[in-house]
Structures are given as structure tokens and as C-alpha cells.
Image (cartoon, rainbow, N blue to C red; front, side):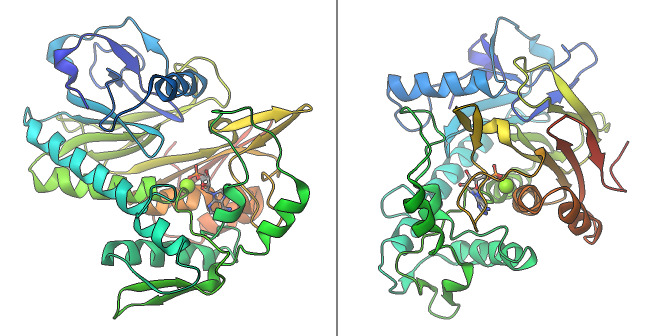
Length: 374
Ligand code: AMP
Ligand code: MG
């Protein structure tokens, strides 16, 4: 991670969502920050892939330089395959950003499916035996299971066997996996196979071939932890941007609302927004086909998967954006509603207090839930 003020080059951080007009004099999209060397060593190849990914998801390098007066204290890093930018608007205290770095590293080491000896890696490689994990991991898995139940398995965190067959990171030449392999993998997707012992702090997968993947909820959860950390250190005006998913802490320093832009699906420019929303102390999280995808034989394959078929969800939606107080709920619900589809998804949102949603269809028509701030 790197201090924005020490470097005068910026990247626009605006993937699914972009921060707008933080100050009156600011450019239309001004969540600008410098793309630093990541906190963990990154090879040139990986960085190249990252930069390619950034451009693709609307995060583009720019020459724009902001005035020092309007600059928040900002750092950008790379965790969970995601560009994460934290901007503090009411403090110069760099130790808060240091604490956030440490927290993100701890979360990645604990929750990553692919990082050896993370809690999730240990559960997935235990061949069905109970594995002792941290209380925090258990409580996140329990939160996730609530959404699995709420959606009758449309959201299912045991989707790892299917996820691992697909390559949406574009590091190699991605291709549609073998149909038999997908058919076999879906037989191991079943969240009821997760067995938790609250007293012993253990998690077991009753189906040893099953595997947990928290990719649909972890970023929201981490944004909530980062918010707690920031508040604990006395800052009350901040933006946490995890690859375009934004958790706004408090209000702008002058008490006005944050304006969050939601990127137009597949737009080449980070400035190309399909909607904006003014929020105070809220999370704005989007799940979209355009975030990670590849095309084969004229068909677009994206990273939000139907747990029953093992293939990308194809129900007329391009993206779902959720407004919620907690990022954990927003992240779980953005994926859940995407898989449920426009009708069932909206029905679910209308049944939940304090949650609003914006659904964008393939033809870019937008549907809002009844309480969406217009
Ligand atoms: P998101 O971008 O929050 O919608 O999360 C997408 C990620 O969640 C994917 O990259 C997978 O790791 C995982 N995932 C994909 N489909 C599902 C699903 N139906 N239920 C739970 N997690 C999923
Ligand atoms: Mg999600």
C-alpha cells in the first residue's frame, strides 16, 4: 500500500461503482488514487493481469491530479484479487491505514479458498473431518448459511467444486469446462453438508468432496470490519472501495451525503455511469456479469454461477446493486438476487427491511425496489 500524497499519479477507481463529487471542484468521478505496489509481492505477470483487469472493469489510468486540499488520506492495495482503496476524509492519521492493511491481510490469510492453511483451505482439505477455525470465520459462515437458506440454495457457499473448474481471471486462455466435470461437481454443492460445532469451534463438510467459497460475501464482510477499525480509531468520514463495491462511512466532512456512481455494464470508460445514488453510512454493492467473464463461440460466460447447473446464470440480468447498512448483507444479497432473477430477487428485497436494490437487465432497463432513494 502507498500514500496517495507521496505520489501524484492516479488511477480512477471506479469499477461497478465510482465515487462522485467529493468536493465541489472535483472532477465528475474523483475517487482517484495511485495504484501502488500491492502489500503482498506481485509478479509483473500478475500485475499486468491486474492492470488489464482494471481497464476491463472500468478502472483506467489517468493523468488527472487532484489538488492537495481536496485529497483524502488514501491507500490502494490488492487483496482478494481486488483493488481496494480506503480514503479517510477527516484525518491525517496514517496508522489507521496501517491497521486496515493488517486487517485485510489477516482476513485474506483466514478466508481465502486458495491460500494454503487459511481456515477455508483447511476445511476444504480436511476430507470431511472437523477443523478448528476462528470464531470470526464460524460467524461469517453462519451469516452466509442464512442466505443459502433464504434463497433455497440459489446462493450456496459450497460452490467451490464448480468455481474451481472455471477460470474467470483471464490468466490463462479460459474455456468452458468439460460438461461431465461440471455435472459431477454440482453433485457436491449443498450447503446443508456444512456441520458447525459452536462449542469446539469446528467446521466439517459432511461431503468430503464439497468445498466452501466465500467469494460472494467476503468482500462485504471485510468492508464491515474495515469500517469498525476506522471508527475505532476515531475517523468518521471515509470511503472503503473494494473493486467498485463501496462502503461509505458516515457522511462527507461537511455533513452532506456521498454520491456513489454505478457503472454502466460493459462500459469502456470509468466515467460512464448508469445511475447515481446519494448515501450516508451505507454500503453499495454490485454483482454483475461484466465483472469477470469470457466469451466462447459468441456466448458470454461470467462468474455468477447457478449452483444447480454449474453454468453461468442466464436470466436476463446484467447486474444487481444492493443498498444496505452492512456490507456483508449487501454482498450476499447482490449475488443471491442475481441468481434468483428479476422477479424472485425483487420479491426477496421487498420482504427485507432496510435493503434496497437496483436491477439492470440485459437491455439495460433498470428496475428499482420501492424504497430506492430517487
Ligand atoms: P459476487 O461478485 O459478490 O456476486 O460474487 C461472485 C463470486 O461468488 C464468484 O466469483 C464465486 O466465487 C462465488 N459464487 C458464484 N456463484 C455463486 C452462488 N450461486 N452462490 C454463492 N457464491 C457464488
Ligand atoms: Mg456478492
